[in-house]
Length: 184
Image 1: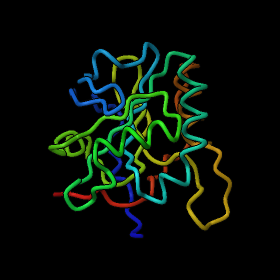
Image 2: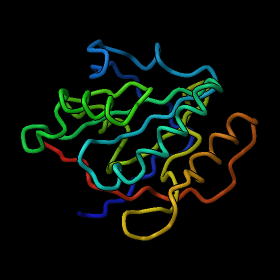
Image 3: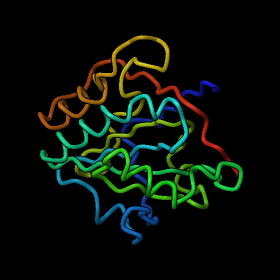
Image 4: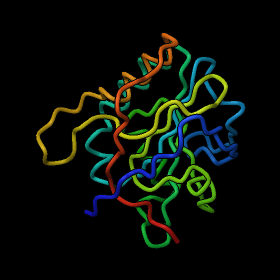
C-alpha cells in the first residue's frame, strides 16, 4: 500500500459544486441540496483502501453524532473502476450497507470532482462551514493501519467542534495519509 498525503487545499476555498450519483439511493444528488445547515464534511473514500477500512467504524460514529448537530457528511469515491472493480457503484452500495453509512456515498465517474477538490488520497477530509468555505482539511486522526495509535477521530472532531462553537481552529492541520486516488 502506497502512502499518499493530502494536497491541503487552501483554507477559505469555496466548495466546488457537484452533482453525482448516490450509489445508495440510486439518485443524483447535488451539493446545494445536501449540505448541512451548520457545516458539511466532504470526504474522498473508497471500498478497498486499508486506510479507509481502518477508520470506517469511527467515521460512522462521528457522522452519526455530528449529523444531529446539522453537519452533513458526504462520501465520494473517484477511483477508476475499470482497473479497480471493487470500487464500482454496485460494490459501493454494498459497502455502504455493510458499514452502516448514514450519509450519501457518491460516485465520481469522470473524476472531475476529485480534481476540483485537489483530492489526492483516500481518506481525504474537507470541512466546510455553513457558507461552504473550507475551514479544515486533512486527517481524521493520527491512526494508520499498523501504527497502533487508536482510531479516535480527534482532529476531525476538534475541527467540527470549532465550527459548531464558532471558534477558530488554531491547531496545526495535518495532511491525511492513505492510498492514492486511482486515476484513469
